[in-house]
Amino acid sequence: MHIFQNKILVFSLLFFSSTFIFAQSGKQKELEARRLEITREIQQINKLLTSNQSKKKSEVSQIEDLSLKVSARENLIKVTNQQANLLTREINNNQKQITENRDELTLLKAGYAKMLQQAYKNKNKQSRVMFLLSSTNFKQAYKRVQYLNQYADYQKEQANKIKAKTITLQEANTNLLTQKATKSKLITENKKAQKALEVERSQHEMIMKSIKKDLNKYTAQVKTKQKEARRIDSEIDKLISAAIAASNKKAGVKTTTKSKSFALTAEAKALAADFLGNKGKLPWPVEKGVIKLRYGKQRSPVDRNLTINSNGVRISTEKGEKVRAVFNGEVMGILKPRRSNPIVMVKHGNYITTYQNLGKIYVKKGDKVTTKQEIGEVFTNPSTGETILKFRIDKDNKTQNPSSWIFKM
Image (cartoon, rainbow, N blue to C red; front, side, top):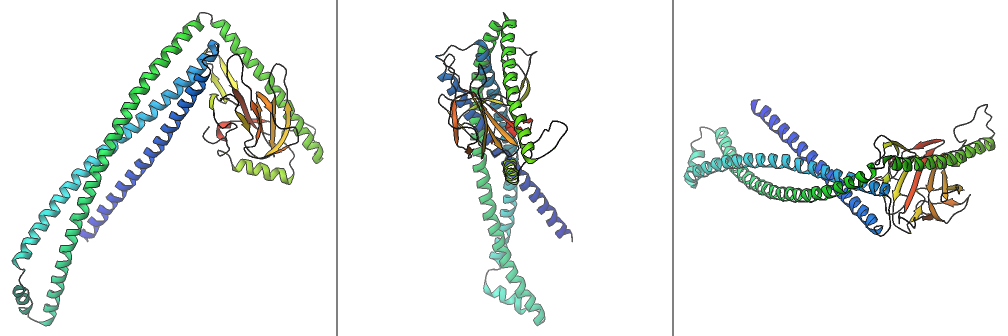
């Protein structure tokens, strides 16, 4: 009974140990994927910013760019530190496991050596025969034959255990060396990232000093941009409200108050369900780009006392970048606001995706579009060289966070 309980205890310890190691390994892979993702993002940011260096950018735009770089670099350092710390724990666990394996291997070899010595003393056939002939009856002789066979099997089992334990120990040592090399590489990369971050922070501080000398002027610029964004958002909202009213009228829905949701046909309901089913998996509206402004309320990088409220995201991309529909749908409308570039709105049941700041448009109202179909080209500011797409998602008349819908946004 005690032997059985001990086996259960050993099995449980092995199970939980392997489960813990597997969980750590999974976390390490997750962190490495995130680290590579941030690294590619930084490369993309650097590429976009370098291509615009010949243009004269405003201090506000420069601060936005540097804030983006600093944030991405800080995330990279944070994730790399998490990886290094996790590796440290894994290395410590491996070293402990190696010590235990060595101790167990020593005991196995010692026991096996004694067994071999005993077997050598009794190796001649005469002693085996005498052992059997000295039995008092047939039943005892039969049990002694069984014992000799079991003893021989036990010898083979112990030899196999030693072989397996030796291989496990060798693999653990190899893994340990790999982990140490990986940790060393991560530490080296983190040092480089820290140096780059110091340079970027220094540039950020230098420009901020210039801005703070006339903060009111730059704050006014930000507020003007916000006012313009609200004006365009208002036009988008009006178009959505008009589309909702038209859908309700067509469906014969009688309401005393202004309706806030689309009356959908069976086909539109199916399309909306498909759109919802792809939440988090929708493609980016441009093939290459980085988020320069996220959805929702956030502090202005120019004046920390100023709150920016964004109904969508601003994506910085390359000159000539094509705009793609993120899902099947129908072009609901094309807006051409004064003092701003054209906007394309695509309806997906009761969901609407909006693509702002286009230089060229390839579709017209009523066109059916498919996922990743090119619907236009992002406008490039000739003065600053910036190519910014503003993208938003609405469900009926309520804005959604695009990061929840677009893959890895």
